[in-house]
Image 1 (cartoon, rainbow, N blue to C red):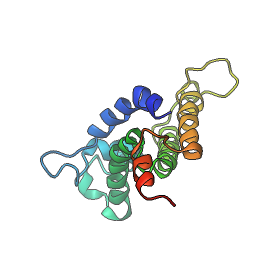
Image 2 (cartoon, rainbow, N blue to C red):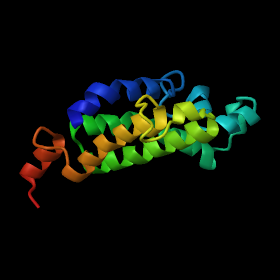
Image 3 (cartoon, helix red, strand yellow):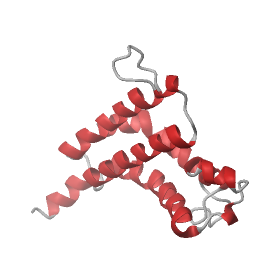
Image 4 (cartoon, helix red, strand yellow):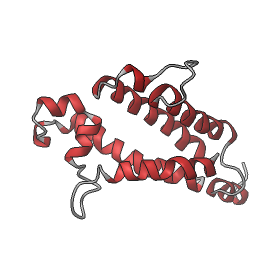
Length: 158
């Protein structure tokens, strides 16, 4: 499952995370305007896309943590580091991302889709459900023997 995640989803989320980086060396500490627009679309529209008008607590912190999660969780999953926790965190990330897409970006019904509709191309109901399925297997089964988790547990058995 980690291989499938790496082959199918890692680059997608890595590229998305890169769009959220602020400029310069401190970009990892100060998300871009695009990060705020992606994560808080309605609020950014209300403040004219002026990040200085968005209070850090809690909204700026949400954007910062969301950006970090989009970088760190996929890396942890691919490496097999704290895989169960990282996968569970990424399931929450996908749920929040889907909620923001539906409510904040106002996806149309065709993009949201529905299960059992015979169309596997809907972004939310079909694609993201498959993503969560992959992650659920990792939550239940763990990373396997080719992982950081296995190396650490081999030297420190429970």
